[in-house]
Image 1 (tube, rainbow, N blue to C red):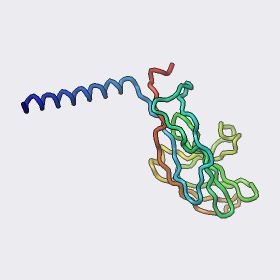
Image 2: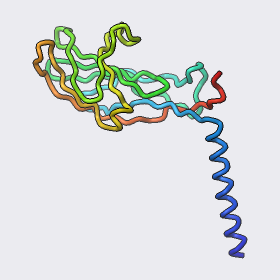
Image 3: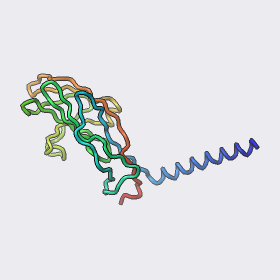
Image 4: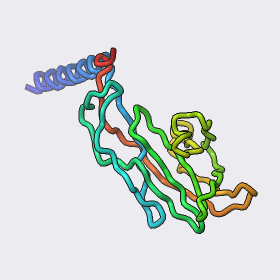
Length: 171
């Protein structure tokens, strides 16, 4: 009886492995999204309503309600954090003082955006490179054009799945 039971368990394990390999061969694509951790200074102002793939089709196991825009309020400034629904996790930022003058951000894994980029017309000046950060928080100084440091910020986040699509669905 124990021999048959062991044989059944081993066979079941092989079936599970075979199904996993088959699913992998179909090319399951996981869409990821950055979720910022809210705090007394960081408030989410907009959330996602849909999760579609790049072809406009609904994702399998999709999630809605993910934060897409947040505002961090510091002493004399605000930082707007945009985490748009995208095929990969992205973060765009811009900072202004109380007179709405642009401020600079300095930190690891931050890149200055070209004014002609897609986010340039929206006023976003920086991107945070999520993959390069490898889980490190968004940590940066908020600096005036004259080099005066207004404050130092640390935004914690995590990356979640917002749904899946099959690679076979893409043209």
